[in-house]
Length: 368
Image 1 (cartoon, rainbow, N blue to C red):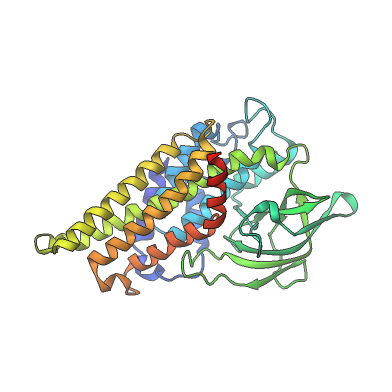
Image 2: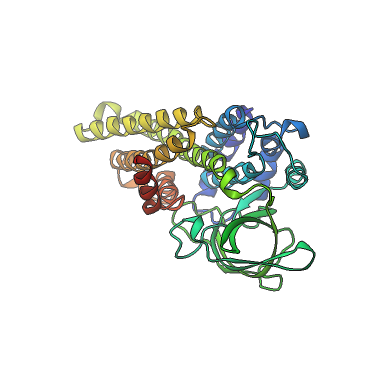
């Protein structure tokens, strides 16, 4: 199935010059990805989808995202969100993660079959990326309705996603909620106000806007399935899919750089040769780590290894792209060159998902 996304990436690559610096998503891209069957990868086989379990379907998703990242990293990042959040409804408490498909899960999976995309609106100012520190409040209303009030940023895929998953505090517990974004205005009339459009140096085309929620209608995620139970599976898949985006960017950057450098192969200076070899080694280490955690999804060590690999892969990617820029020279930072944009994209992934400080805290605690 990833071959279909290679074809899509090849098409996106033909538009690279127009896409450089693009700050908006193109709905046609996501229609093409959906038509290739990507959305069905998050739907259980019991509902005519292709999701079996994390061990079997996770690697297929990872390679699909990796392929898409070679065409457009922003598109790939938004695509990675969709299966990551729907993983909540796959996570069961028994030995089989699909032992129970609740009525709510059936409704949500059905939206994916109908072509709807899912995303996240979780990060909050001042939280340092720690979802447990959410200050957004959830208040129960009549007829099982929920109203959310708080501030969120990094709603990647805003305008493209039909549903956003978010967190809020309810009776001193952090729970997961779903906001139906279809036909919802962003002017505050329906409890949702866009307070800042995404203007990032990296991943600039993801539409990761910031929003204020004020009595915004939402639905509580399955009450019988606490977020703490589902979180390991969500964390495992999302971390590997973020690694997949970086891997795809690196793959494309090296193909691009080697084609540029082929003509000057014999005349390269000693420093250029050394930097290129070092960059190639960083690339190799990043891809080796990615493929290792791709194949360990769903195992007892899957979450810990994916978290550690993401940290290392982000570092290797920054180093590798920096070295490539040194070899290619000043033209690599021209707006007509994708290398400068790719460098910012991998930095954005390292900083934002989750932030470096939180990653260090998590890895430090895991050591003990």
